[in-house]
Length: 596
Ligand code: F6R
Image (cartoon, rainbow, N blue to C red; front, side, top):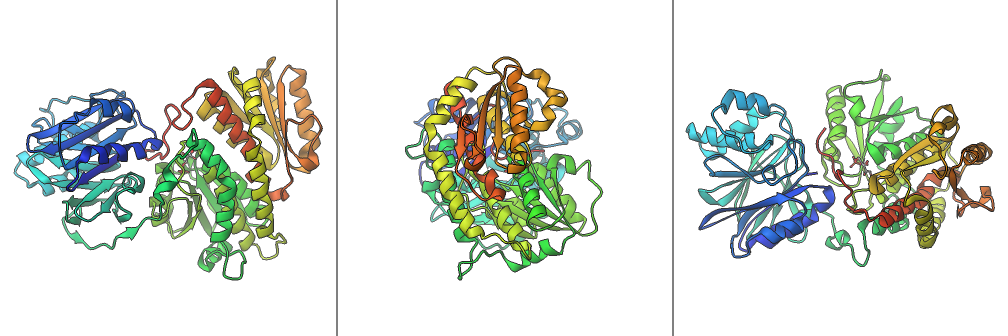
C-alpha cells in the first residue's frame, strides 16, 4: 500500500527519493509525489500513475538536500493529481505525506476546520490543516504536531516539512509502519527498510504514538506527551542485491524459482549444531502447553494456515482452527480455555491481522507470529516470532513466502509432536529437488496457459483433502494476476451447485496428490468433462495416469502442498504473461495491506 521515503543530508534529494519510491513500487500504488525544500521555498511534483511519470514531471533544475516522497494507494478519493500526496496546509507552510486512514476526519473538519477550504477528497488533508491551525493558535510546531496526533483517530505514518525550517523532517506514527534510517551526515525516514537500504542498514524502529524530529546529524524520538525516548538502533538483515530483479523479466518468476533454495535455507536456519531440527524451546513449550491453536491470517497466508492446521492436527495432534483475520475481530468464535494465537503474515504489517493481535493481547492470550520480516509490527508485538527466511518478496502475488510458511509450519508441528516418525531433513531435501524439477520444465506451463487459459473468462481448480487447500491458493494466484475469474473448489462439492457454471471449454484444473482421494477426484473430472470442461490434471508420479498433463515426482505425502503449488504458480504466471498483464503489480492490489 502507500509508501513513504524522506531524506535530509548533503546530497541532491531527487534521485534518492525517486529511487527509494521505486523500491516501494512492489507494495502497490496508483499515484506518486515528491516535495523538496530549498532556498527558493517548497517545490511539489505529483500526479496519478507510476514513478516513471513522476520522473518526467520533476524539474531537474530544482536542487535540494531535504525532501519527502510518497506512493499512494487510494482510500479516500479517486486516484488523481489533487488527491496525490504531498498535501499542503492552506498557508502552504506545512507539507506532508501520510500512510494510513484517519477515521474521524469528518468530525475534525466540523469541530476545528469549518472555515478551511479543502482542496482534495483525502482524509490526509485534515492532518496538515490541523497542524497549521494549532500553529496559528500559538503552539510551537512540535507541540502542534503532537496535539494533532492526539486528535486524529486511526492509522498514520507521517513525514512533515515546514517551509520555515529547512533543517528538519518531522515524523509521527500510529499503527502504520515507519522507520528512521541512520547515516553519516544524513538521515532518512521510510515506511519500509527497502526504500533506504541502498543508503543505510542501520535503523530506529518507531512505536505507536511516537513523534520524531530528524535533522541531517540527529534523530530525536519523543512520546506523544513530549518525553524524550532513548532507543538503540538495529541492523536490518536485507541484502540490497536480494531486491534486484537481475536478468528475470519479472520478480514473480524469480521468486517462484527461488523456492527450492528457500526450503534449503529454512533447513539451515532451523537446525542445531548436531544437524537436528530446532526451534526455540520457549516457542515449542508455548505451543505444547496450549489446548488449541488459533491460526489468524489473510489471503495466501490464510491458505498456508489451512495446510498448517493439517500439519498441527495430523503430525502434532493439536486442535487447530484457522480464521480469516478480518472476520475474527468482529465475529470472535467461542474460544478454548488455553488458546495460542498463531499469526501468519509474510509482511508482518497486515492491519487486519494486527487488529486481532491487539485484541487477543488485551485478553491476555499467548501470541506467536510467523513472518518473513524481522522487526515487523506483528513480530515486535507478539510474544514469540518464527521467521520464514524467504528473503524479500517483491512481486505482489505471494509465492515463495507461501511455501516457506508451510515449510516452517511443518517443522513446528514435527517438533511439537512427541512421537512422529518423519525424517523431515531428509524429506525436505527430496522436496527441494522435486521443486527444482518442477521449475525447470517451464515450457509445459507456458503451452497449457496459452492453450487453455489465455482466452478464458473463468476457471476452476478442484481437489480434495490437502489438495483442496492448494486449489484455493492456486485460484487466488490465477485470478489476482491474470484477472480470470477462478474458484478453488472441494472436488466433491462441485456437483452440489457450482457444476451449473461448467460450459464447453471451461478449464478445470485438478490436483491429485493423495492416494485416498485419487479415484474420487478422477470421477469428478469425468463429471465436468462430460459437460464440456477442458481438464488439466496435476498429479504425483505414484498416482499419475498416462494422460495427466503435469506429473510431479513423489514427495512425502504430508509435504505435497509445498510442491504441487508450483505448477499452479507457473500456470498463473504464463496466463498473465500471455494476456499482457502487469504481473508484478496487478491492478488494485497492494503488497502490504496496512488498512483494515
Ligand atoms: C496474495 C497475497 C495476499 C496476502 C495477504 C496477507 O498473493 O499476497 O493475499 O497473502 O494480503 O498478507 P500478509 O501475509 O503480508 O499478512
